[in-house]
Structures are given as structure tokens and as C-alpha cells.
View 1 (cartoon, helix red, strand yellow):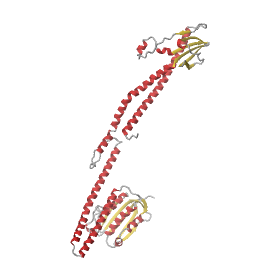
View 2 (cartoon, helix red, strand yellow):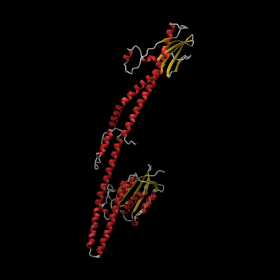
View 3 (cartoon, one colour):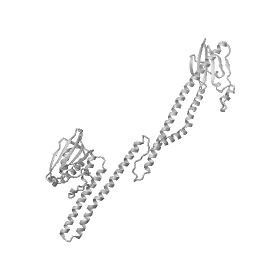
View 4 (spheres, one colour):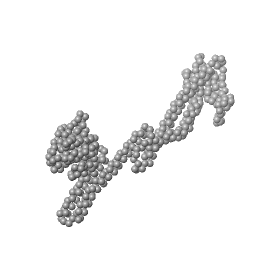
Length: 461
């Protein structure tokens, strides 16, 4: 099963970390406690052996006497859970049967507790040993006293095993008891931590389609980039919608006049009484439809460019791109003026060549269309120290337009109304240059000079 919830993942991971940490701590504590317990019991065995050895100094062993057997009281475990105070009032303890001792001299048993009668001869090696007697494990300690005398003490291993079980339960019980409260606490903490994310989700989900204002919730540092990214997306969507609305408004405004003119020519054709009048009306309709086709194509081109965010770039010589753009101009525009190109052959640019040719063609088209007859158009390219390309196009215009309005959509100077055009060419050029990371400037110099300057990055070698 695949889990796609951050909250569920956090709950699972945090609970596992807490349980593993508590279990590891309990395991380490258990091992340390068992080590200390073994040391205490081992010390008791050694102390008991030395205590018996000290008692023997006050009671010498008779070499030919029978072994002295010390009785050990037996207390049965009734299964009742007695307190420590109740156990102490019994006069003994059930664990007495699990502690034994023997005293040997010259390989002869001279003294023993009655529960150690079946033990084999003690090991004649000082220290601790493990024994198996009638299926019961014992931990023993051997203490030599000289003259062939050995003191042997032992303790059943199940005493330690029982104690280890008590310690293990003491370690596990808190984990089991605290697991549910800890899980609930972890759930509440995770829910509290994720509350800002839930607020952000509810804020986005509650918005209407037309509500494109930025989100201004107070967020922790981790969620601020997400909120900023959403706000940036909202800004782009709002800008895109504004562009679409402006495009629709501009298209409706600009198409209204050509459509009205076409309708007027169609009415003239309908009312024409002579062949000459019919031909004039048909010719006017054809010219009007051509202008409208050009306007619609320009609008579609501009709309497509406004949607583009990234372009495919490749390297090419600038002079080649300029010459290709000039070759696409109508022959009358080429012959109307003289062209002077001052472009070094080693200047290389990186960009979408089709778009760059379209931008330059619009500039050259306007430069020739609005230039004086037989004037000179200069195209000059220079590279700055910062590896930026500056391409300047200068002409001698028939009318000097306002430079601050050049490039605005549908702007056409009053003195140019008789020349075919839609007023969108420079707007298209501006968008293409922006896509290439460049800029465009318009300058007017008296008495008749108009200068268009393009700034573009140069392709690095």
C-alpha cells in the first residue's frame, strides 16, 4: 500500500523513532542492570564462602567425623503476591533453597547445606564455575583455605533468571503503558505543526476563479517559499488574463473599423449601377480583406509571442540574420532607399533565428516604409566591453513620431495614416527582443532622423 500523506508518514516515522529509542534505552538499561546484578550475586557468593571459611577457624574440622549437614527451611510459593513486609514476617525466604554451600578437606565432604548433598566434588581451581545438577544450572565459587580445605558456595541460576525477567518487565511495561498516550500526543503535535499548511490549503481551495489577489497568511519559514510560489503563479495568471482581455479588446476595437469599411464597400457593390462601379467596389473589398488578413495575422503573432516563455536558441552570424531579414522585404521597399550595412562578420549571436529575422524585418519594413525616397538607411553593429551587442538602424523619416509612443500597440502617427500598416509590428519586435533577454530603444533627432537601437547579448565562444 502506497502512502501519499505527509501527516501519516510523520506519525509513522515519529512513532517508530520514539518506540525504537525507548526500546534501545530499555535494552541498554536491561543489559547494564543484568551486569550489575551478576556482579552483586557473584560478590555474595564470594562473601558467603569467606564467611563460612571464617566460621571454620572457630570450629575446627574433625577428620573422622561424619559430614555436618545444615538444614535449609523450605517455603512453598503459594502464588500470592506478598509485599516485602509480609515476606519478612515469614521467618525465612523461598530463595533459601536456591543457595547452597559445601566444605571439603582432602577430597572429603565435611560440611554442607542439605540442598547441596548431590553436588560433585568441587573444582580444585579457585574462582567461579557453572554446574549442571539434575537439570538445574548453578553458579558456584571455590575458595581454598590451605591444608586441603576448600569452601564451595553455589546459587541456582534461575534466581538470576527470575530477576532478569522482573527487570525486563520493568523496562517494557512503561513503554507499553506510554505507547498510546505518546501516539496521541505525537498526533496532536503533528496536527498542530501542519496547521499552517492546512490554512494555506483552505485559503487556496476557498478562492473563486476571479479572485486573483495574493495570499497574505503568516507562515513559518518552511512554507513561505510555497506561498511565494503560489503568489507568483497568481501574478502570472492575472497578468496572462489581463493580456488576454487587452488582446480581445484591442482586436475588437481594431477589427470594428475594417469590418465597417468592408460592409460599406459591400453595400456600394450592391447599389452599383455600372460595371465600373462594381469593379471599384470589388477592388476596395479585396484591398480591405487583405488589410484585415494582415491585421489578424499580426494579432495572432503577438498573442502567440506573449504566451512564449522560453525559446530555442542556436548560434549564427549576425550579418547572415540581417541579410536574411532584408531578403524577405518586398522589392519596392528595398529599392526605395539605399542600404548601408556596417556589421563585422565575426559577430555571433544566440537566439531563435526565425523570431530574430521577424523582428529585424519589422524594423527594416518600417524604416523603409516611412523613409524619404532615395534616402539612406544605416544598419550598424557594435560590441561593447561587457560583451553586449548594439544594433542601430537609422533612417530619414518623412514624419518624426513621438519616441515614447513608438512600440505601443496600434499606434500610428497621423502623418502615416495613408501608409498601409496595423501598428503592431514594433510591438511584435519588442516582445521578440524581450524573449532574447534584450531591449529596444527609440530616438528621434532633428531634423528628420529616427534611430532604433537593439541591445542583445553576444554568444560566447
